[in-house]
Image (cartoon, rainbow, N blue to C red; front, side, top):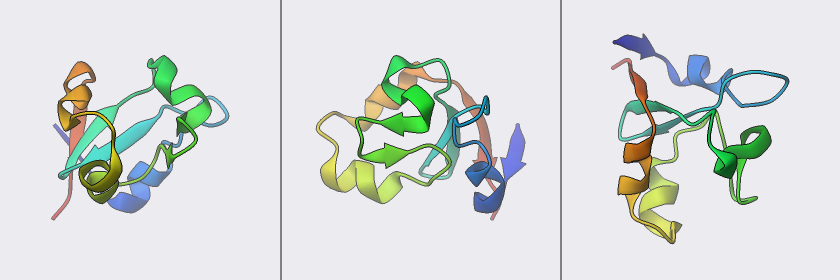
Length: 78
């Protein structure tokens, strides 16, 4: 599995044809194909290319298991 730095994940922001990746608990998820992540934004609240761990645990109206629908494409380098 590929390892990413946070800076590398930031390039996958879903804009200009880029894939859309998000991080949750050091796992990198590919949300590119999701209609919920149009143009790299989710519901006007979150942007692809970021670590969403704190935001998902604090304010998401859905369970974090919603990410189970998306492939894990890597992990964050320690």
